Amino acid sequence: MRWMFQIAWGFFVVTALLGFVLRLQLVHPLPVIQYGHVLHAHSHIAFLGWVFNAFFALSLKRFVRPEHFRFFIRWFIVLQVANLGMLIAYPMQGYGSISILFTTLHMVGSIAFALRLWNANTATAIARPFLKAALAFMLLSGIGPLALGPLAALDLRSSPLYELAIYWYLHFQYNGWFICFLLAWVFRQHPESSSHRAKAALRCWVSGIVLSFLLSVLWLQPPLWVFAIAGAGALVQLIGLGYSCAMLQGHWPRLAGGTKMIQTLCALAFAALVLKNLMQLAAAWPALADLANSRFIVIGFLHWVFLVVVTPFLIAEGLRLKWLPDNSLSRASIGLLILGVLLTQLILFAAPVTGTFGLPIPETNLVAAGMMLLGGIGVGFRRQ
Image: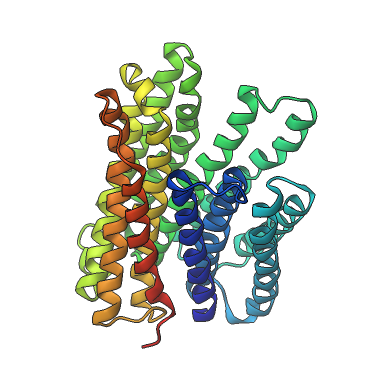
């Protein structure tokens, strides 16, 4: 499991490197690099190389019996073949026949992973429904990419349906698969006594995630009732978060225990999750629709979930499980990583506001933040 997590970390380094290349293209564009193609590689490796692989390792650590390891290891290898294929193919051809082939291979592997984990997991009665919800959302998100081919064949690349298929994938990955898996991991050792709160929390999270997909259609300026349903979805998720916190009352010291670095990372991830849900609720307000759907805000929100909610949590668990080194150098490097992440978020969220006043933020600031982020990630390959 440690080597699986280290492979995931390696793909995280590659993700940061590709992101840095994209930022450099804004300052010193190179004609040999096609921005869109590298962007596809960056996003796919971020989702499937870093987060999916890290979740895979955590699943084997807590949710899988040893007698099932052989099955999962075989599919893990297949998934890495798919990841490497996408890493090579996407920068070369974008959405082409070879990249689609490797993407489909990864989808097949993820289905095999999800079905076996669904039927043969060892999660507690509290954690199991959240784990199954995560797997269901992961499979549901796959409908989005599957729809792109037929839509393109029907010459609908420029239609809202094509954009909504992409948003479908992003929404059920970020808000469904990612968040529900983290909740399942947090609840894995929770006492069985508060099952009624767990059921209420699960209902709120699942219904809120489904309803809040409508946040992804607000850029189409739909009727006000669509805004209302989208806002209700965001509000219900906040209620689910409240139930989740109530379930964990009295258990925070154990859940966030460990070194100061682990505690800080857990606190950052939790605070970012709260702010994520508040941002979703604000995005449903019609007066803020144009701002919430601006390019920089959308990119900032996606990076917020990926880099400020999920990644600090995974780093904390990597440190807790001794899969990452925990020493003075590693703590300094992780600090540099977090500083780069927060600077990136500040730039992205401030860009629409400063642009309104004719003060666009120089792209060189994004490059500098990317250098900090990339430099901090390198600690993952250093041995203790």
